[in-house]
Amino acid sequence: KMRHRLTSLRTLAMTVTKPSLLGVVFDLDGTLTKGDVLDMSTMYARCNIDRDKDILTEIEKQSPEEQKRLFAIIEEMEEEARISTVLATGACDVARWLNAHGIRSGLVSRNSRKTVDYFAENYWPENVELYPRVSRDDSFPPKP
Image (cartoon, rainbow, N blue to C red; front, side, top):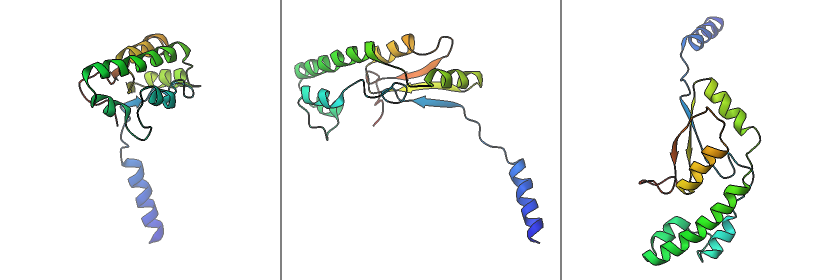
């Protein structure tokens, strides 16, 4: 009886179709790139925002003039990070493998559109699509 049950379970396991992986969504800082090129502690300090609060939410609460000033600080820091970014070991290999297997890759980041596009154009492997690309500049929240 037990042997029949195990055989039935094996047969069932072999006939059940596993779901296919259709896509992978990556984060940018510390996932596709090495380490913390973007120093968040310094960013919070320069923007005078408590580290335990969400920086983008806090900036949204400010006057338009203050928002502009604070986003200029963030943009300056992102610019520095863009030019000093180092890809995580194996990031391009994973991207190429996913592409070769028909699995799409996307990117969701709280970085600016400029930073997200710069990464895709300068670091992502050629002939491997990175879409969608979601940044903080899109009309919906990029991520929590």
